[in-house]
Image (cartoon, one colour):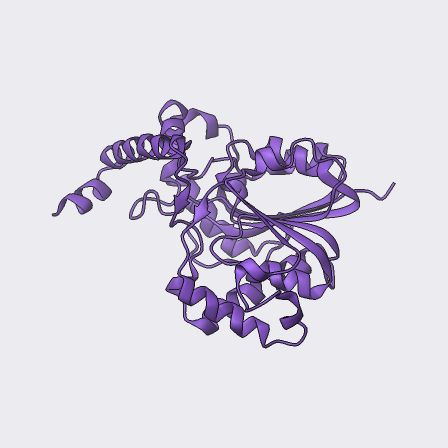
Length: 316
């Protein structure tokens, strides 16, 4: 067994690795080095796969938000290494898109150019470029690298018509406080759409899917804070936030523990009982090992490993 496999096999060696890695990440960030290779990477995809992913994410935002298109001033949190979704938002009628990211994803310039050139061939897209198709020539795009959501929205009252994200909120240091700021930043009638992945993002691959919930808080925090690994804010916290937010909205389930595939987002009451039962069985096999913070959660709450949060600010 080589060293990598040995670390993966041992829970505590894995935790030690993340402690060291997070410490190194904190030092790198303190020196202003914000580059990252994490998140969705288009250089690993064929062109048609990249375009399909961009269309799926944009389509999901419209579908979940109940909108034919987005208009006005939009914020996309965590765009990753490509602004294709922002282009689709602009082509649909948005006046501007602010793309914000705590880190600066590394980019494959050749792969990116192919994506932008392909999008530019779509009706109405070419006019969005002020020059050859590329991220630096997109009209209406405002990129804010190195700007965490917690800072961007603070004090931005009533500025934006919509705020969207996919697999980002689980990486924020304090997603509930950030959601408070986002709610204040929305214009009356504005909409938020967040798809939130509550899994461990491969931290403990090969172990039980809820292993990351067995790590005590005093150890988990220094393993994850600088690196932005999952914050372990689970479905009940988002449900409570929505109830107190003053916004009209819904929380739908998009993933269940132990199930590899996403499901069509539905209210928890509408879940397939067989699928929910399989996920609850996963919870029960590890419940006695859960960290204290999660011991009081009911089985169904722990069985949820992905949600879609949609919230709309009242017009008056």
